[in-house]
Length: 292
Figure (tube, rainbow, N blue to C red):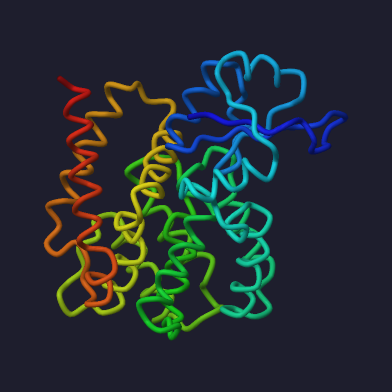
């Protein structure tokens, strides 16, 4: 069901309401699109909508709630995004993390963050970067090797939805880090970035296991978060037709399900393997139904 609170929040010379779903982000996007709400108004778990269309949205089926009731409904739905994952908060958190990783390299950190915040990114954004860094800390009890952390920062630094993205990101890492860290470490960072194209590290590649598991951790997330991930990926490929996207995404899901193992670290398997299998299998079934 779709809910909306009263216009109250001031910005841009008017006041805004929050539009949410208690079921799924997909439902929310569908309602917004059907009622002329701009895509840019979406903020991870809700739309900010101006007062002038409040009445139209209620007439279209959005259920009015007070601000407190709407907040409680969103939390209860499991779709609420923590404050630290919102754009401004993510930027601040990542700036601190970068400064601790490579002190004094403010310019390079800002350049990378600018890439991660490019407007065409939805799932592959700074929020994904922070999630990967946090997943690495879960896997290592916070003792993340510097080369692995640097590889996380660079692994989607170039993102255009093309097969060359991982290679281009690896080359960017080599060019950016030359002279800042030892040459062997530069090579290791680039090697790890290239691994994210296949997520198939060698059995004894401990660093590769860490990065690949952290990058795929989203697959083992709760169903509501997984649904948000799928929506973000679809929006990343908004230029692709629904039919072509479904075929391409089904191929990707099959490749992920065929990974043996999908997660290489003991901790990764413990945390994410079973739920990832379930999430991917459910998604593949939905995609196959679309193709019927």
